[in-house]
Length: 421
Ligand code: EPZ
Image 1 (cartoon, rainbow, N blue to C red):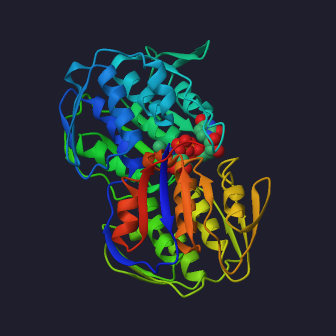
Image 2 (image 1 turned 60 degrees about the horizontal axis):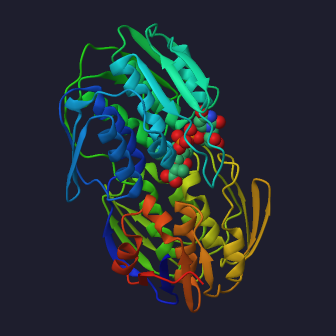
Image 3 (image 1 turned 180 degrees about the horizontal axis):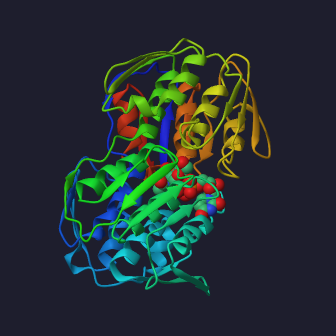
């Protein structure tokens, strides 16, 4: 079994350059099939979710080549509108292909993407958005069958600002003659990056980053050479790693403007953060202060993908912190593992009360999702003794060799295969 071993107690002090964002690369890979031309993406991390998306594109007839961190997608051979069942279940973001496939074929057949550890992950908002564009959507035996012959530009309103649903409908509308307006759209930075990519392809999209996105349909799009935005969650995670050890981190290629809520919370805990254009330097105190309360919200609120990392920091901070997880219904799955390390976390529904203890102790724990696995690594860095994080492969879904990043910052982190007993 794949494990990450961390020996705590070392003060981190180092530098790292942040790779492109998983949550920008995945929808952009889907958007790449909106043209017959080749697209080249730079600084792409080698993550399992990105590999799976590439496998799905190849099953549909595209060619995906990687050379280092450069990925080339050639959609000329795109010939299938049915998504492969097993692969689609492996990653939730396969649902992002629904909009682009409908744009190209005016029909699509996809499998219900599985839920995951953090929640049921329904897709009703995706399907509602497509229905508002005139797509006939039928659900039969776990399959979603879409007929897009009646698709037309128009108004789409989201009951909740869903990131994926916003991206899906954007990609379904860019080749629809006329004006489509998305209302109550999500405002995450990755949506602005998708807009930037689509516009580089020749699409006419504006308003991303606000709740209203306007799209003027065009006849065709062309391939581009593009570098997706840097990963704000990886940057936040590494800053939290340094903060857990009273250390310093100097990060480059950081989208500082997209991390205001995270920087504010780290500063509230006593960290000094210096921001330059796309660099951030964090200096942490020997022991962090508790934050009064942290509520996760859609952007620009505090990002849910950084919640469990902050919970790990609160576990050994001075005082009591309260966390309310408003976005996903089950994102405290690591509280038990942190308590095994000596933390004092009480979970009640969507609220966690964390009473800071002076020090955590290393233990054998289990990663249950990609951000939770990273949070256990953060806790281990500040703990006394050795921690073994089992099922560490889950961390690879969102971090391209987290152990290399941590070692570059000065940690004692080693990836290893362990026997199961
Ligand atoms: C994206 O997921 C990200 N994934 C998530 O990152 C991130 O946590 C999330 O946005 C919120 O920022 C990718 O971009 C690949 P949502 P997505 O639709 O699009 C509910 C990570 O760790 N909902 O904004 O699935 C949903 O259940 C991952 O990198 C519906 O009810 O997020 C959740 O409670 C985790 N119906 C809330 O909305 C729908 O049709 C937010 O989901 C869709 C969503």
